[in-house]
Image (cartoon, rainbow, N blue to C red; front, top):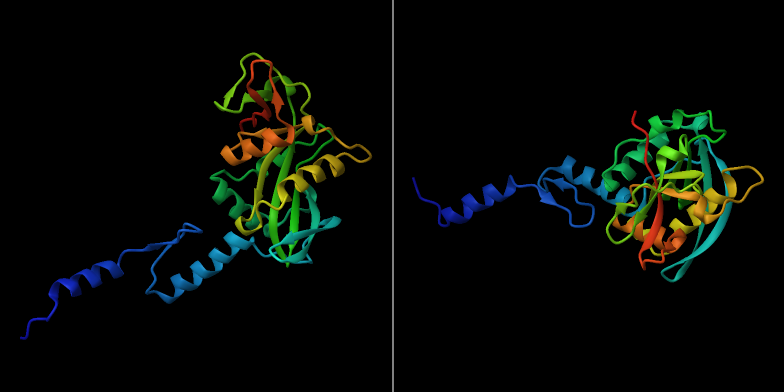
Length: 243
């Protein structure tokens, strides 16, 4: 038997082939030598960067369309809302993508509350048949228990202080990576204020965020944060009730 000319290289090549590749952009791990893995990654990668696909036949209410400058082109983005009664498997698949990136649990259980006059709802930004932005809301059931102020720099709750201004809870807010820094998140928050309660436009300070991440906290700081006399920025937050 003839020994291989480069035995170390062969062993290394075999070993390397069994190590999954991790995409630096979408963070998915897959085997580059397996066709099904490659195809699965390609689909997930596109959904992650550009947003998951959305069917025009899905139950929803069209709110308005806006024009955004993306690169060198003007792009039309349509804002829609999906009520609790209209939520479906398609929306759940979209929220799975959102929750995976935010490292958050599914929040559809929070949509069960109906005794406040405000029901859970999802606001979506749609462009080129893809969901490029999502904002889900839930009602505040117990303001005394739920509504608080958070110190932006430390992400600690201000003790023994209730934020009585909060009317709506922002449960999730997400924008597809390739659509960020275009003002979509702020546009979704404005839609929440304008369309959640018929005939009423809410004040920015009437929105509270649920355990915001660093990027979510930064969004809240500039959207409806408040400078305290101590020199600290405070952001309105609410605590989700246990299931």
